Length: 252
Image 1 (cartoon, rainbow, N blue to C red):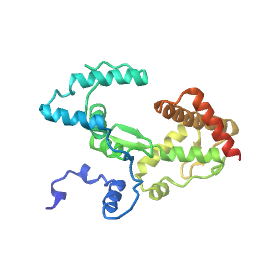
Image 2: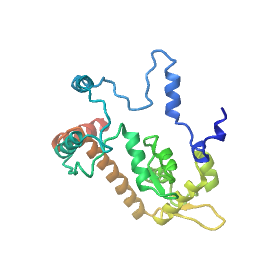
Image 3: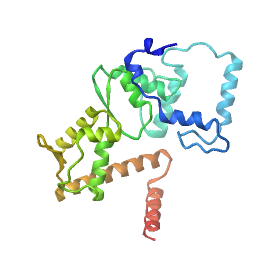
Image 4: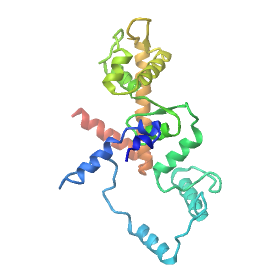
């Protein structure tokens, strides 16, 4: 069957996930360790499996409301408040989906209009970009901006350095030139680069700008680390102790 005559152009333009290709390869390899996706290394806890078996035995196999069972949504709201101090109305602010991909898909379809630009940080979940495109939006990746900022802080990119042209950079990274153009425009707005007509873009990195960049990246890393530790149930005191221990290990 010739799918090119059936599938629309938007779907045909979406590239398959590279991680999924690795899955197919790994299935044919023995004793291989997959590092391709966050697959848990433990089975589903027994009390959850037991509840599923019990539900099947009781005949709970019919369609629920579109938003999911009220009892389940109420318990989700209770968990979020108990675990993360977040309050949501189970009746109007919580919906149950079969997985994260479906939830992301629904959210993008509800919020994105055709032509909207959606900022997608990289690396990230592989579905963000394709689902944005399927919803009619245009994904804008931040890896170029993050790469340039980190290079500036690390000293590998210096004040006055010329950046590759938009066309060359898009070819090197394998992304659309419009994505590079957007990234350069955002960098210009932050006054990190200066572009001249008919010339390459140059970095503008006075010491005050570098100091602000260091603070920005450091704050971002610390917020991410703090969020992860809180989700793991680590107390502030234990987090500070772990930080001090890691600091000492790096010094030695």
